[in-house]
Image (cartoon, rainbow, N blue to C red):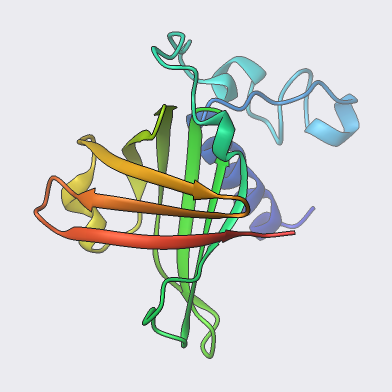
Length: 165
């Protein structure tokens, strides 16, 4: 593997470890060393132990969702992935193929109350939401879901997403 590839692999692995993903064991030749990845010991990649989530996560919303809110800028695309109590979302420019905003963290769903806490993000407006619990109302209609409410920054949102197949 070349140097850039090793670096990018290490960044991805560290991001996954931050999100609570643990590396699988693999043959030494594939990992770059016993039990690790490209010289990183497996224990360093696993990150600190995580406490059990207080809520059951947002399993009812598991999957990939695309923002289809009327009036959403057609030059942009927003995808949100929810898996258990973890979420990530990214908005990118369709023409330039570059990320505009991105974030991820923990989430939960109890009834029609959806909560999320941004634990990491790119530079941008969502930085003011880092570490702050956002509480939204969710309305589900088959493969469409709408999140609405007021963020802790005072911004009102009403976003509709279509499940991606």
